Length: 585
Image (cartoon, rainbow, N blue to C red; front, top):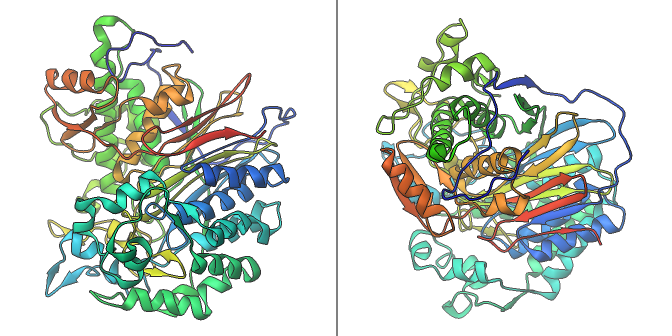
């Protein structure tokens, strides 16, 4: 791998000869391991949360234990992004067993949900109305995920994992600039009910004003919730007085939801195999399966890029590397939008979408800059029955109330966990000191398109499609090489792919890859982050190539990356947020 220098665009990649893009694999082959000598690291969106994780690691806990402690703190200090009232995908690498396991704690629709969940007076609600309704609240999976992962692989005593967050909730934490800025945003306040709901208004807008930077905010209700969970496990959350409060907050107006105590009691974490693909360079990319988009989209983008990039690197071809990244995204996003949904409820052709033969054929379908992005048909390419006609095309637009945690522990185990409440501050409904998600608006509000069902339509006990892409990368020898992921709504896919290409092929460091300008190519307009180095040049180059470009500022990526180097662990935290990546000291 060579270090690329002298970039005038946001994206430039070192070349290698085209070859079959990826091969599929869901498990790591067992093999002997050398002693792990790289140490450990935690990367997350708040220094307070990172310190909580490091505290657990220093006391002998592993990556699973640290992830629980980190996220419990994030739910307190970064409530706009995730929390106990949401859900997550956790991808775990057990180095001794040489296995990768996905814990799917995605929220679910109530058992009574129908495809017309968001219909009112015979027509689909507008997005903002649905966004803030009780109908948007899915059964939270976060606490159940904590316990499922801990039972499977945790090392520390369960109750101790919540001590850092309980202390902060009881003693108070200083409101960060990001939280204060988000609360004060006139645009956001005009769209959500956070300052109208009496419970959330009292907490976030005391005396009618948003919490200012540095204000010490205590949350005794949050401390009580975590203390109960520490003592009694998930039963303290999914049954009893707290469960009743969750249901009451969900069912209250406007447009109350139909979640019941039975829905809460019946929630189950799904333990799944990852979706893995091996690039022609030898790197293996493993991420979460549907309803997450990670395994499909990340492998498609990287595989497609291998075919679309120029065969040789020259200064004259700089724009073509950028073009290849954009075209790979457009192709992959179109397929993801059409096919990916909850595979427990609908057919999702995962293996076909990342089949090397389909990737090669799909690359030949790269859209002209002015052409409409449309899904491909892996069934036709692979000599099977046509697949595209199974579903109507889906216009779902997910929100961005999400966070990502990357951890490697002292034994070389790793966690990539992306957690969410969907939109900023979720549904603006609060119970037990935490916000409830509005995750069900990640379903398609309109369940049919051109007379055909949409794969991602609502349904009973169904999990909405997610853009979350918690990702692990292994090198050609099968050793852990990289942990990455990001918040950011449907742009998550582009953000994470940027770090994969940046590190794996451009020779960038973890921090350099996170800081690169974001280029998001979902659909017919290419969003380019122009207020960071390289962004304006990338936008201009794409316009010269004929693309419709939207100049963007204030991108909300929150990438946290750890790369395993010969000399130790290298961390990267997104400068667009407040996170840090710190080693164990």
